[in-house]
Length: 480
Image 1: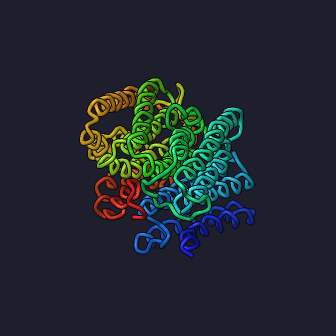
Image 2: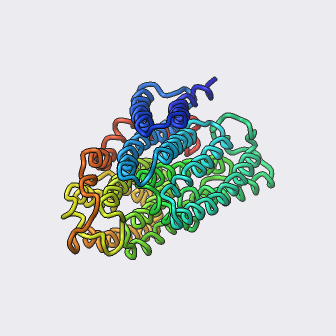
Image 3: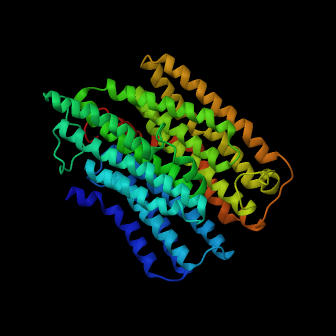
């Protein structure tokens, strides 16, 4: 019964997807989408007051983020897809297909946190891949198709490895495959074969779920997929889908750590996190397309979450807070890039210059979101990154904290090198003028930007029990 109650939030996006497929006119599809947006946010408010009995604190922390950000990206989709429909670029069938897929994508994102079985979580993560890969290819043409294919192949192989990892860790830990519980089992007397199975499974988990989360060196699909997808899809991929992969990975790491101890899992997370920070630092300065730059930034921030989880203690609290602060900040950037595309018909290249002059409100929001994403105060990412690094200091990992700081500074300089030219350089050029600065384009961008500013300060106080409880779940404290 607890499992049934835990899954009730899935009914809303599931019903919305079914209704979307039944209607024919775009106006009805947009109406269903708006109803879903309102329903997701109302559900979030309800879950703050009375979360389902089957969820632990980590599931509450993750699912509240999904409800907030998926609803916002769905609202942005109404504007972006509506503008393309009005311009005659797509028809009613494409509109219906897009929103049905996005609603299924939302269902799968929620299912990751709703399910209380490790194999079911794996299936939900696979569902996010299968639904979003078609959204990545939505624009049509060779480049989106190539990006979607690379996404499917790389993360599909990662999914198989994640399944193997799940089975090995459950076997080694003595957890029944069909058992509906996520509580770590606790260290006990296990056979040598069981310990080896957990250790091998742990490596496979980092590889498999690391590919889903865009962690280096399993990140190769991410820049292409994020840059070719529609802007609200890119935002959902970066802000929610990648975090879903991290969520599933940390669940398995917690289980494995309860059997073999925390040292080896933490080393893997620290190494993977630093690699992700380093590759992002090397790549961001060379990007000339907004969305590719933001995609490499996503790799950086998934690395910060992995690093915080590897440091443990306050670093783990910082990693959990970073899921939210990064989600709002990156959503603001991708929403802004969507406005740029509607104006310039591109997000990079020699024609995309002088954004601030052509689109003063969107350009200003992009500038502020950039300040947020590089971790400068007073935005929330500053506080979550500070907690991650403080966790490393408290854990005695001073060398790795220093390396991480160097990479963070390089990433900051990379944005500082590229963004001024895009925002200020040259004379503005564009098409589709009125769409980019309309109220429907600006209010979600403003909401995401306000979230990027306040969540780092508000969440730890307003949801302190859930925040600390989520960390407690990942350190062997059970359901939390």
